[in-house]
Length: 302
Length: 224
Image (cartoon, rainbow over all chains, first blue to last red; front, side, top):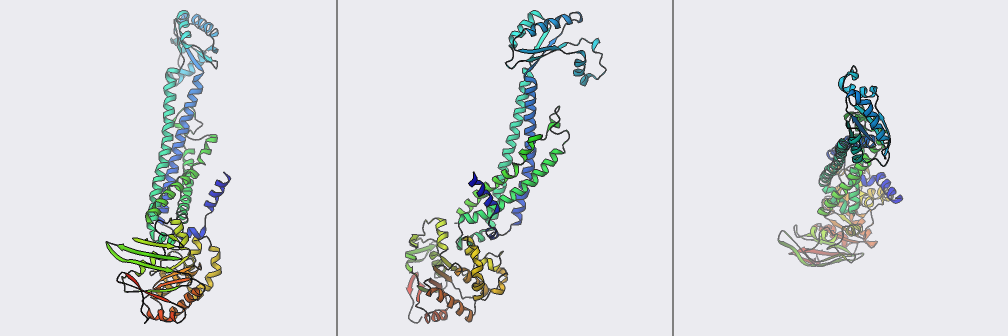
C-alpha cells in the first residue's frame, strides 16, 4: 500500500525532462480535458440520480415496512363498535406492537391534498383508519385477516406489501440504471482518451523513433504520454466534478426534500464525499487507457 | 562488441547484400565506402539494431538482434553513439536538450551540465545551445548530432556521412574527436564518400576501409 502510494506520488511528480521529450499536442490536450470534464459532469448527475433513488427506496422500505393500515367501512352507528372490536383483536394479536385509530383531524390532514382544507369530514362516509405498528418479527397477515373477517366484517387489512414492493423494486432498478450509466460513462471516457492517446502517439511517431534511437526504453516513452494524459484527465475531471456539484447544489429542493423524487435529486451529508472519488477514478481510467494504447502503439511501431 | 555473421538483407523482393561479415572490436576504426544505393546506411542500421537481417546474424555484445527484447535493444543502443545521415532531432527541444537526450533517457540528465559546455564548445555550437534544430544549418545539425552521439562516451560510434555538410576545417576537428575517442578504446565505424577524410584519418590512426559494392563487402584498395 505504502509502495503503491509512493509509486503514484512519484508518477504524479513526474520527470520534467522526460515530459519535455514529448511535444505538447494542443488538439489531443483539449480533447482529453473536455472529455474528462464532460464525463465527470455526467457522472455527478448519474451519481446524484443513483443516490436519490437509493434514498427513496430506503425511505419507502423503512417507513412502510413496519406499518400496516386497517380500514373499517361500516354504517355510522356501527363504526365506533367495530373500531373498538378491531382494536381489541389487534391488541391480542402477536407481532403487533401498537394499534391506534386515527383521529378525525389526522384523517382530514390525509385528505386535504385532494379535497382542500374545508372538507366536512363528519358529513361524509369516510372509513375509519387504524394505524398498526409491527414488532420486529411482524405478524401473521393471513391469520389476522381471517380473524377480522369473523369479528369485524367491515375491516380491510392493508399491510402495504402490494404497492410497496413494486415501488422499492422500481427504485432499485433506477439505482441500477444510475450505476450502469456511471459504468458506461467510464467506458466512454476510456474510449475517448484511448483515441486521443493513439492520435498523439501517431502524431509523434518521429519523436518516438528518435527517443528509441538514443536508447529510450518503451516504459520511458510510454510514461511521458501516460503521465500527460492522466494529469489532463485529472484536471478536466476536477473541473467537471466541481461544475456538476455546483449545478446539483443549485437544483430546487435538493436532497433534503423528502416528499418528491425529482426535488430529492442531490447530495446530502456524506454523499458529497462520493464526488471526491470522481477525479482520481477518471485519472485511473485515463492512466489505464493511455498505457494500454501506448503499449500497443509502441509494439506496432517497433 | 558488434558482430555481423553471414548477413543478408533484402527488401522489396530484391537482395541488397548477402554473405556479409564484419566485426567491430574495441579500438577498431573502420570506414565504409561504396556507391550510393549500395546499402551503406542499411548496413549501419543493422549494426545498431534498427534493422534485423533477412538471414545471418547480428550480435551486439554477444546477443543476437533477431528477436531481441526492445528493452534489451534500448540498453544496447546506449552503448552505441549514432550520427544519422538526417541527424534525427526532437525539433521542439533546444539544441542543448537534444544533445543531452541520451543522458536524459538513461536517467542521467543531471550529468549533462558536466559535459555539455565542453562538448558544445568543441563542435562550435555554444552560442546556438538554446536554438531549436530547425533554426540550424545542415552543418550545425551534423555537428550537434556528433556531440549527441558521444555524450554518453559510448563503446562504439557509428556515423553515417558525418561530414557531408560541413567544411574541411570542421570535418578535421570532428575527425580529431573521433580519433581521440578511438585511442581511448572506442570502436568507430564511419560511412562516407569523403576520400580526403579517410586519408586524413589514416595519417593519424590505424584504419580499415571497407567497400560495399555488388552486394559484397570488400576491403578497399591500397589507394585509400
